[in-house]
Amino acid sequence: MVPEESRRTKIEPGMRCLVVGLGVSGFAAVRFLERAGARVAVSDGARPEAVLAEIRQWLQKHDIPWESGGHQSDWFTEAQLVVVSPGVPLTLPALERSRRAGIPIVGELGLGARYLDIPVVAVTGTNGKSTVTELLGEIFLAAGKKVFVGGNLGTPLCAYLLGNDVADLVVLEVSSYQLDTAPDFKPQAAVLLNITPDHLDRYRDFNHYAASKMSIFAAQGPGDFAVINGDDPEIEARVKTSSGHGKFCRFGEKAGGSCRALIASDEITLYGAGEPEIYSLAGHQLRAAPNLGNAAAAILTARLMGCDQAAVKKGLDDFRALAHRLEKVTEADGVQYVDDSKATNVGAVVAALSGQNRPVILIAGGRDKRGGYQPLVPLVREKVKAMVLIGEASEVMDQVFRGVTRVIRAGSMEEAVFLARELAESGDVVLLSPACASFDMFTDYKHRGRLFQEVVLTQSVGMRAGGEG
Picture 1: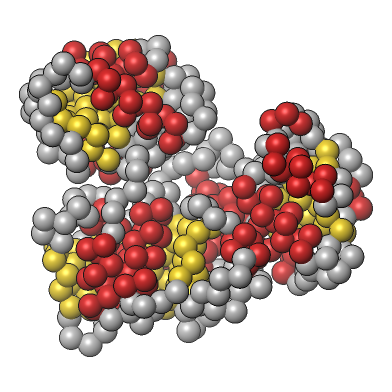
Picture 2: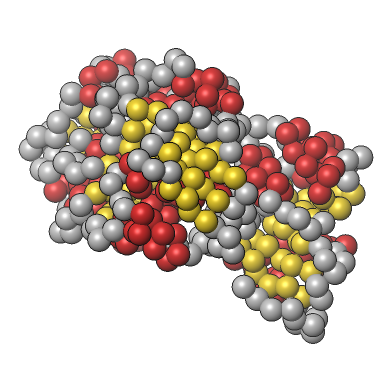
């Protein structure tokens, strides 16, 4: 856990600060601390050549000492503040040395958030948080607000604080890793979309992962809003013991309470802002699961933050779905190809399959995240004609799904797409929705999705195209 002292730490000129991890957020923290006049050092676990050349040059130019290839230096016990990147395990032995020395440990979000003096909207959840974050950004823009959208999505908070742009409010996507090191983070509106098993290769168990997600509400006061999924039993069970004091508002098909966004068919009805307001998503790209719930969360949050109905509707119309999230690639010979590479956990694949009304050839697999695949079995039995498995998890997944549906294993994305195309018939959908991390075969989920799209389009040459979208 993060020491209590971290809540009181302020950056002062000459303060000794150590940044652990030189990823995007770590480098933003380095620059922020250097600008604040701190004496900064950096410790990174990667080999020196793995650190981007421009980062190495920047560190040299600003005379910032750094170590790579491990965390062995005395900086961990000599610093006055340690700022840890989200990807760095908090169980790192070097960080334990800092804890024993009583040194505060925070993350880049925890560092930057204390410098914000404008309203903050924060979005978390196992799945859907990028979509809701971007959608809220569109709605606030439609309302005439100058808004910064970032955090775990795109630009880190500290990078925004380094710039000259002054926003009216901030919309942040926040991960559980970031929340673990931001104990005093206090968004005016905090959105929790869902909690399903994920990152169990990092957390002790599901209970600890879920507690991390719930911590987004911990520092909220009576004037703040806590927007939750009223259809998620895991969230509802934990709300009763939440330490936060924000006003809970719900969205979903079973959402209750005086402040809620109720989903019925392709309509969202908002209660709690005077007369009920109806938002129709008929024919809209967000009309299908799971995006209907995402839209409900964004509509409710935007109205709580003062956006008028016209701005909400314009923002919905202006929004464009994000890449690699149920993104239609093409349709050829009556077979639709869909890229859902961002589905890196079982819950995301459950949502993807739930929204399919065509027989599915599912391409799945990658690096196992130790969450188990049993929750997928009923939907695979109902909707999946065949599974093509790739990556390190293919053997484990084969054992789970063989006998539930037809299972074939492939050694590459090219082979997987070829086999899926051979299995598919007119009226089917070939869906890449992996349920796993990508790092065994790809640099990230975007690389995996791009390769899937390239292979699909290449192999579609010669087939009768049915249009792209």
